[in-house]
Amino acid sequence: MQDRIALVTGSTSGIGFETALGLARHGFRVGLVGRDVARTRAAVERIRSSVPGARVDAFTADLSAQAEVRRLAREVRALYPRLDVLVNNAGAIFDRHALTPDGIERTWALDHLAYVLLSLDLLDLLKASAPSRIVNVASAAHTRGRIRFDDLGHARRFSAMAVYSQAKLGNVLFTAALARRLAGTGVTVNALHPGVIASGFAGDTGGWFGLGWRLIRPFMRTPVDGARTSLHVATASDLDGVTGRYFARSRPKATSRRAADLDLQERVWLLSLDQLGLPQTAA
Image 1: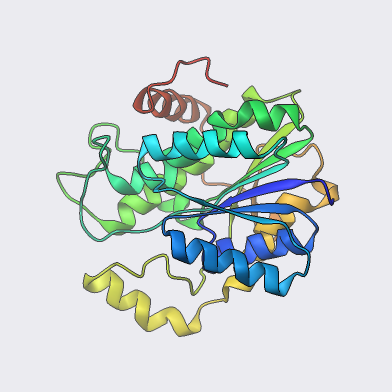
Image 2: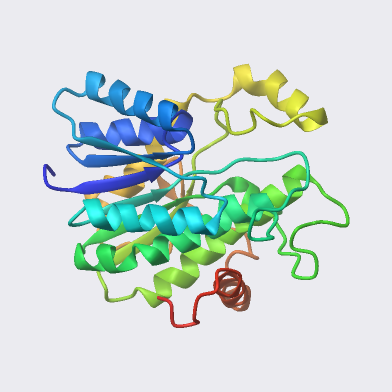
Protein backbone atom coordinates (compact mmCIF):
# COMPACT_ATOMS: atom_id res chain seq x y z
CA MET A 1 0.00 0.00 0.00
CA GLN A 2 3.01 2.32 -0.24
CA ASP A 3 1.49 4.28 -3.11
CA ARG A 4 -2.00 4.54 -1.64
CA ILE A 5 -3.39 7.82 -0.27
CA ALA A 6 -6.06 8.49 2.36
CA LEU A 7 -7.69 11.66 3.64
CA VAL A 8 -9.19 11.82 7.15
CA THR A 9 -11.23 14.77 8.37
CA GLY A 10 -11.37 15.74 12.03
CA SER A 11 -8.04 14.02 12.57
CA THR A 12 -6.21 16.16 15.13
CA SER A 13 -7.49 14.10 18.07
CA GLY A 14 -9.80 11.28 19.10
CA ILE A 15 -11.11 8.75 16.62
CA GLY A 16 -9.91 10.74 13.62
CA PHE A 17 -6.33 10.88 14.83
CA GLU A 18 -6.25 7.17 15.66
CA THR A 19 -7.73 6.39 12.25
CA ALA A 20 -5.07 8.48 10.51
CA LEU A 21 -2.36 6.86 12.61
CA GLY A 22 -3.66 3.40 11.76
CA LEU A 23 -3.74 4.20 8.05
CA ALA A 24 -0.14 5.44 8.23
CA ARG A 25 0.81 2.13 9.87
CA HIS A 26 -0.90 0.37 6.96
CA GLY A 27 1.47 2.21 4.64
CA PHE A 28 -0.89 4.89 3.34
CA ARG A 29 0.20 8.43 2.69
CA VAL A 30 -2.29 10.28 4.89
CA GLY A 31 -3.77 13.76 4.74
CA LEU A 32 -4.96 15.12 8.09
CA VAL A 33 -7.73 17.73 8.11
CA GLY A 34 -8.26 19.95 11.13
CA ARG A 35 -9.62 23.41 11.95
CA ASP A 36 -6.51 24.74 13.70
CA VAL A 37 -3.17 25.05 11.92
CA ALA A 38 -1.00 24.43 14.99
CA ARG A 39 -3.00 21.43 16.21
CA THR A 40 -3.06 19.87 12.76
CA ARG A 41 0.69 20.25 12.33
CA ALA A 42 1.25 18.82 15.82
CA ALA A 43 -0.88 15.78 14.91
CA VAL A 44 1.18 15.30 11.74
CA GLU A 45 4.40 15.31 13.78
CA ARG A 46 2.96 12.81 16.27
CA ILE A 47 2.24 10.39 13.47
CA ARG A 48 5.66 10.90 11.90
CA SER A 49 7.35 10.20 15.22
CA SER A 50 5.21 7.07 15.76
CA VAL A 51 5.60 5.72 12.21
CA PRO A 52 9.12 6.36 10.91
CA GLY A 53 9.07 7.19 7.23
CA ALA A 54 5.36 7.95 7.18
CA ARG A 55 4.20 10.44 4.58
CA VAL A 56 1.72 12.75 6.26
CA ASP A 57 0.24 16.06 5.10
CA ALA A 58 -1.68 18.78 6.92
CA PHE A 59 -4.82 20.52 5.63
CA THR A 60 -6.84 23.06 7.57
CA ALA A 61 -10.48 23.97 7.03
CA ASP A 62 -13.64 24.80 8.93
CA LEU A 63 -15.87 22.15 7.39
CA SER A 64 -19.08 23.80 8.57
CA ALA A 65 -18.54 26.43 5.85
CA GLN A 66 -19.15 25.31 2.28
CA ALA A 67 -16.49 27.62 0.85
CA GLU A 68 -13.92 26.02 3.16
CA VAL A 69 -14.92 22.50 2.09
CA ARG A 70 -14.56 23.48 -1.57
CA ARG A 71 -11.17 25.07 -0.92
CA LEU A 72 -10.02 21.92 0.88
CA ALA A 73 -11.10 19.77 -2.06
CA ARG A 74 -9.16 22.00 -4.47
CA GLU A 75 -6.03 21.71 -2.31
CA VAL A 76 -6.36 17.93 -2.10
CA ARG A 77 -6.79 17.61 -5.86
CA ALA A 78 -3.79 19.86 -6.44
CA LEU A 79 -1.50 17.87 -4.13
CA TYR A 80 -2.60 14.28 -4.62
CA PRO A 81 -2.45 12.37 -7.91
CA ARG A 82 -4.93 9.84 -6.50
CA LEU A 83 -7.19 9.23 -3.52
CA ASP A 84 -7.87 5.68 -2.37
CA VAL A 85 -9.74 6.32 0.88
CA LEU A 86 -11.77 9.28 2.11
CA VAL A 87 -12.80 9.08 5.77
CA ASN A 88 -15.50 11.62 6.61
CA ASN A 89 -15.02 11.77 10.37
CA ALA A 90 -15.22 15.43 11.46
CA GLY A 91 -18.21 16.26 13.62
CA ALA A 92 -19.38 17.86 16.82
CA ILE A 93 -22.42 18.38 18.99
CA PHE A 94 -23.49 21.87 20.04
CA ASP A 95 -25.72 22.96 22.89
CA ARG A 96 -26.95 26.18 21.26
CA HIS A 97 -28.65 26.95 17.99
CA ALA A 98 -26.39 28.78 15.55
CA LEU A 99 -26.19 29.29 11.81
CA THR A 100 -23.15 28.96 9.56
CA PRO A 101 -22.15 31.66 7.05
CA ASP A 102 -24.29 29.71 4.56
CA GLY A 103 -27.36 30.19 6.76
CA ILE A 104 -27.59 26.53 7.79
CA GLU A 105 -27.79 25.14 11.34
CA ARG A 106 -24.19 24.27 12.18
CA THR A 107 -24.70 20.65 13.34
CA TRP A 108 -26.37 19.70 10.05
CA ALA A 109 -23.77 21.72 8.13
CA LEU A 110 -20.73 20.15 9.80
CA ASP A 111 -21.91 16.64 10.64
CA HIS A 112 -23.83 15.96 7.43
CA LEU A 113 -23.48 18.45 4.57
CA ALA A 114 -19.68 18.51 4.83
CA TYR A 115 -19.68 14.74 4.19
CA VAL A 116 -21.82 15.21 1.11
CA LEU A 117 -19.91 18.14 -0.36
CA LEU A 118 -16.40 16.80 0.23
CA SER A 119 -17.31 13.37 -1.15
CA LEU A 120 -18.83 14.84 -4.30
CA ASP A 121 -16.03 17.39 -4.82
CA LEU A 122 -13.45 14.59 -4.62
CA LEU A 123 -15.49 12.04 -6.54
CA ASP A 124 -13.63 12.38 -9.85
CA LEU A 125 -10.34 11.73 -8.04
CA LEU A 126 -11.80 8.74 -6.22
CA LYS A 127 -13.23 7.32 -9.45
CA ALA A 128 -9.87 7.73 -11.20
CA SER A 129 -8.22 5.85 -8.30
CA ALA A 130 -10.73 2.98 -8.17
CA PRO A 131 -11.05 0.64 -6.44
CA SER A 132 -11.43 3.27 -3.75
CA ARG A 133 -13.54 3.80 -0.64
CA ILE A 134 -15.59 6.49 1.10
CA VAL A 135 -16.04 5.85 4.82
CA ASN A 136 -18.70 7.88 6.64
CA VAL A 137 -18.44 7.94 10.42
CA ALA A 138 -22.07 8.04 11.54
CA SER A 139 -23.48 6.89 14.89
CA ALA A 140 -26.04 4.62 16.50
CA ALA A 141 -27.72 7.93 17.35
CA HIS A 142 -29.15 7.77 13.82
CA THR A 143 -31.73 5.31 15.16
CA ARG A 144 -33.26 8.15 17.19
CA GLY A 145 -33.02 10.64 14.35
CA ARG A 146 -35.88 12.23 12.42
CA ILE A 147 -35.47 14.54 9.45
CA ARG A 148 -37.57 17.60 10.26
CA PHE A 149 -38.08 18.93 6.76
CA ASP A 150 -40.32 21.69 8.10
CA ASP A 151 -37.78 22.81 10.72
CA LEU A 152 -34.43 21.31 9.76
CA GLY A 153 -32.49 23.65 12.03
CA HIS A 154 -34.76 22.96 15.02
CA ALA A 155 -35.09 26.71 15.41
CA ARG A 156 -38.44 26.45 17.16
CA ARG A 157 -37.24 24.01 19.82
CA PHE A 158 -33.54 23.29 19.82
CA SER A 159 -32.16 20.07 21.30
CA ALA A 160 -28.48 19.21 20.97
CA MET A 161 -29.14 15.46 20.82
CA ALA A 162 -32.05 15.81 18.41
CA VAL A 163 -30.07 17.81 15.84
CA TYR A 164 -27.07 15.49 16.23
CA SER A 165 -29.24 12.40 15.73
CA GLN A 166 -30.83 14.03 12.70
CA ALA A 167 -27.40 14.67 11.16
CA LYS A 168 -26.23 11.11 11.84
CA LEU A 169 -29.40 9.79 10.21
CA GLY A 170 -28.50 12.06 7.31
CA ASN A 171 -25.10 10.33 7.07
CA VAL A 172 -26.65 6.88 6.76
CA LEU A 173 -29.31 8.01 4.28
CA PHE A 174 -26.64 9.74 2.17
CA THR A 175 -24.43 6.65 2.24
CA ALA A 176 -27.17 4.49 0.75
CA ALA A 177 -28.19 7.06 -1.87
CA LEU A 178 -24.59 7.62 -3.01
CA ALA A 179 -23.81 3.90 -3.07
CA ARG A 180 -26.62 3.35 -5.59
CA ARG A 181 -25.28 6.11 -7.81
CA LEU A 182 -21.71 4.76 -7.68
CA ALA A 183 -22.61 1.18 -8.64
CA GLY A 184 -20.12 -0.07 -11.20
CA THR A 185 -17.60 2.75 -10.68
CA GLY A 186 -15.30 0.86 -8.30
CA VAL A 187 -15.93 3.44 -5.56
CA THR A 188 -17.63 2.00 -2.47
CA VAL A 189 -19.28 4.01 0.28
CA ASN A 190 -20.15 2.67 3.72
CA ALA A 191 -21.20 4.14 7.08
CA LEU A 192 -20.34 3.05 10.60
CA HIS A 193 -20.92 3.49 14.31
CA PRO A 194 -17.57 3.85 16.14
CA GLY A 195 -19.03 3.26 19.60
CA VAL A 196 -19.51 5.68 22.47
CA ILE A 197 -16.00 7.04 22.72
CA ALA A 198 -14.20 9.25 25.22
CA SER A 199 -13.25 11.90 22.70
CA GLY A 200 -13.45 15.68 22.62
CA PHE A 201 -16.43 15.86 20.28
CA ALA A 202 -18.70 17.32 22.98
CA GLY A 203 -15.94 19.36 24.58
CA ASP A 204 -17.60 22.72 23.90
CA THR A 205 -21.04 21.64 25.06
CA GLY A 206 -22.47 23.11 28.24
CA GLY A 207 -25.71 22.65 30.11
CA TRP A 208 -27.07 19.31 31.28
CA PHE A 209 -25.84 17.50 28.18
CA GLY A 210 -22.26 18.71 28.65
CA LEU A 211 -22.34 17.87 32.35
CA GLY A 212 -23.68 14.38 31.68
CA TRP A 213 -21.07 13.76 28.99
CA ARG A 214 -18.24 14.71 31.33
CA LEU A 215 -19.62 12.48 34.11
CA ILE A 216 -19.81 9.35 31.95
CA ARG A 217 -16.66 10.03 29.90
CA PRO A 218 -14.36 7.97 32.18
CA PHE A 219 -16.49 4.89 31.47
CA MET A 220 -16.44 5.20 27.67
CA ARG A 221 -14.31 3.28 25.20
CA THR A 222 -11.00 4.79 24.09
CA PRO A 223 -10.39 6.51 20.73
CA VAL A 224 -8.16 3.57 19.79
CA ASP A 225 -11.20 1.29 20.19
CA GLY A 226 -13.34 3.77 18.30
CA ALA A 227 -11.01 3.83 15.31
CA ARG A 228 -11.05 0.05 14.82
CA THR A 229 -14.25 -0.02 12.81
CA SER A 230 -13.18 2.96 10.68
CA LEU A 231 -9.90 1.22 9.88
CA HIS A 232 -11.66 -2.05 9.14
CA VAL A 233 -14.08 -0.44 6.72
CA ALA A 234 -11.25 1.53 5.11
CA THR A 235 -8.78 -1.32 4.64
CA ALA A 236 -10.24 -4.83 5.05
CA SER A 237 -9.71 -6.88 1.90
CA ASP A 238 -12.91 -8.84 2.49
CA LEU A 239 -14.86 -5.60 1.99
CA ASP A 240 -13.66 -5.16 -1.60
CA GLY A 241 -16.77 -4.24 -3.56
CA VAL A 242 -19.00 -4.06 -0.45
CA THR A 243 -21.03 -0.86 -0.55
CA GLY A 244 -24.05 0.84 0.95
CA ARG A 245 -23.68 -0.96 4.27
CA TYR A 246 -23.60 0.13 7.91
CA PHE A 247 -21.05 -1.32 10.36
CA ALA A 248 -20.59 -1.49 14.13
CA ARG A 249 -17.76 -3.30 15.92
CA SER A 250 -16.33 -4.06 12.45
CA ARG A 251 -19.39 -6.08 11.48
CA PRO A 252 -22.36 -5.32 9.23
CA LYS A 253 -25.39 -4.21 11.18
CA ALA A 254 -28.95 -3.31 10.29
CA THR A 255 -29.81 0.38 10.24
CA SER A 256 -32.99 1.90 11.60
CA ARG A 257 -36.13 1.54 9.50
CA ARG A 258 -35.99 5.24 8.67
CA ALA A 259 -32.43 4.91 7.40
CA ALA A 260 -33.51 2.03 5.14
CA ASP A 261 -36.43 4.01 3.68
CA LEU A 262 -35.67 4.47 -0.02
CA ASP A 263 -37.98 7.46 -0.41
CA LEU A 264 -36.41 9.19 2.58
CA GLN A 265 -32.93 8.50 1.22
CA GLU A 266 -33.86 10.21 -2.03
CA ARG A 267 -35.57 13.17 -0.31
CA VAL A 268 -32.50 13.84 1.84
CA TRP A 269 -30.21 13.38 -1.16
CA LEU A 270 -32.11 16.04 -3.12
CA LEU A 271 -32.39 18.32 -0.09
CA SER A 272 -28.64 18.12 0.50
CA LEU A 273 -27.80 18.90 -3.11
CA ASP A 274 -30.17 21.86 -3.02
CA GLN A 275 -28.57 23.24 0.15
CA LEU A 276 -25.15 22.88 -1.47
CA GLY A 277 -26.21 24.48 -4.73
CA LEU A 278 -25.39 21.31 -6.68
CA PRO A 279 -27.30 19.81 -9.64
CA GLN A 280 -29.30 16.64 -9.14
CA THR A 281 -26.82 14.88 -11.43
CA ALA A 282 -23.89 15.69 -9.08
CA ALA A 283 -22.81 12.05 -8.69
